[in-house]
Amino acid sequence: MFNFDLSQDIEDYLLANPVSTEFKIITHLQATGRLHKKVLANPLSLFRCHFLIFNALYRLQYSTFSHQKYHLDISSVGIRLSPCQQTDAAPSQPLDTYSPLGLFYLDLSQLSQIREQDVNKLLDQFWQHYFSPQQKTQALITLQFHQDEHPNLSFKCIKKQYRRLVMQHHPDRGGDADRLIAIQQAMQCLEHYYP
Image (tube, rainbow, N blue to C red; front, side, top):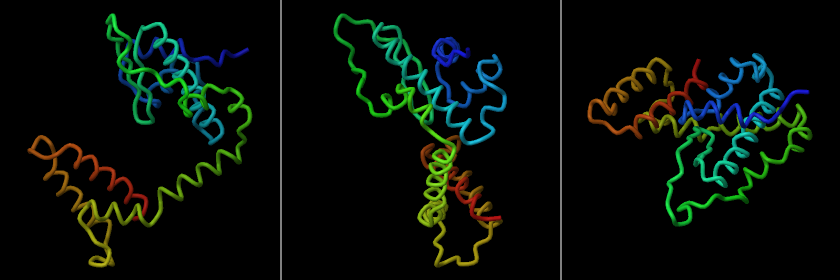
């Protein structure tokens, strides 16, 4: 039978790559044969893969914290493994063992209860929020456009403005990295609205 606990595989990977992402972990597990190459091919398989990764990450987080081996930060945008600070005092940042997200991923019954239509519904809700008119408006404002001033705005014009703002706000030219990230995210959003 397949061993669904991926925590040892992920710990080994994070020891060699202490700053990573979920996608990099999945790619590694596919390369080692622990996950199927087509695990991201459909919504239900994608959800199950994501669930198993985060189940292993939270198991690893609790285990390494209780043994004072490492500190594992888990978020949707990054995973970071760092050594625990060895002091005589108690740990400076206690682990939230009642984290609703952690408790969800540690409950393996969630894995068997989810159905494909549930996953599709969650994805539809995400995309409806992602493609909301407010998202588009905010992205245009970030790129310094106002819809009422540019009712027939072309994607070519948006790309030109994007390039100009990237040059202006790039940290290598004295710009602000956070502002550059916001500009890049706005462009990614607008790519979905304009052909």
